[in-house]
Image 1 (cartoon, rainbow, N blue to C red):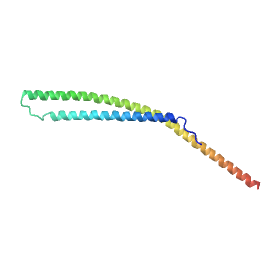
Image 2 (tube, helix red, strand yellow):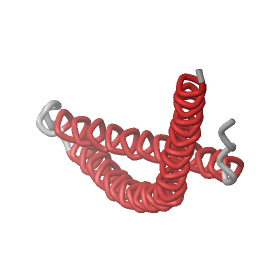
Image 3 (cartoon, rainbow, N blue to C red):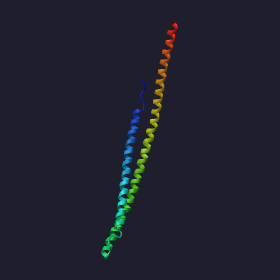
Image 4 (cartoon, rainbow, N blue to C red):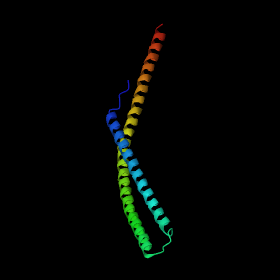
Length: 143
C-alpha cells in the first residue's frame, strides 16, 4: 500500500496561503481599476466642462475657474490614489509570488514522492510475479 505524502499537511497550508494571496491580489487589482476609472471619469468631467458654458460675466468666469481648479485638484488626488493602490497591488503580487514559490517546491516533492511510490508498487508487483513464475517452474519441473 502506498504511503501518504508526509508533507501533505504543509502542502495544504501552502495552498491555502496561495489562495489567500491570490484573493488579496485580485482585490488590490480591483481597487486599482476602480481608482483608474474614477480618474478617467474626472478627466471627462473636466473636458466636458471646458467650453460647455458661455461665459458672460466675471462671476461666471470665477465659477468656471473655481470648478476647473477643484477638478484639477481632484485629479491630482486621484493620481496619488492610483499610485498608492498600484504600490499595494505590487506588494500583493510579490506576496502571491512568494506563496506560489513555497507551494511549488512542495508540489515538486509530492510529485517525486508519488513517482517513488509508483516505482515501489511496480517493483513489489514484479517481485510477486517473479515468485509466482519461479514456483510454477519448480512445480512443473517436479512432476
